Image (cartoon, rainbow over all chains, first blue to last red; front, side):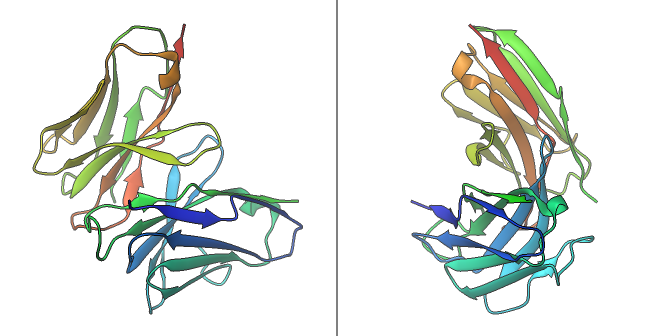
Length: 118
Length: 113
């Protein structure tokens, strides 16, 4: 139980295009989801907290107009990287905190999405 | 602001050795602490979760301890195997349930046969 999926698992795009990454909780509902970013040889850094039905909360230094987050349902959050540039190339990982049907004090992580911007 | 530090950054050991990975954090007001494993190019595998009220957790050859007052945790791996080679990440949760995790930079472990 408590499985989180991400789609796509990897994506290559041209500079200037937009890319959407989906994060789904498959067997539980998640009022809150988190988006992290990991650059090569670095640790995971929190980008934003996504709350179902409300605006996301972004960490300092993360451009909310560039990284659009939508959490329209209790099982789906999306991250859209708008006008992507090579410096946005990274590993994006989401996590979901169960609001029911699981442990509400922990997070379950997706497998990550590798984004490469040419 | 919470900061998580992991020492050493890298570690190479021969198969069979027992080893200890260290994690320290600056703010002791944490809800829980979690150890993860990450293989190259892959996502995270949760190894052990320690609640702030607990002192340690064990799973197979892994044992994690938590000393919240001193801001330290250790991950003990017994009888290391080549399959244990990976990066081990320590992460702490905020002072409330369900807050985002703050990660250390990890310890990259290489176990040679």
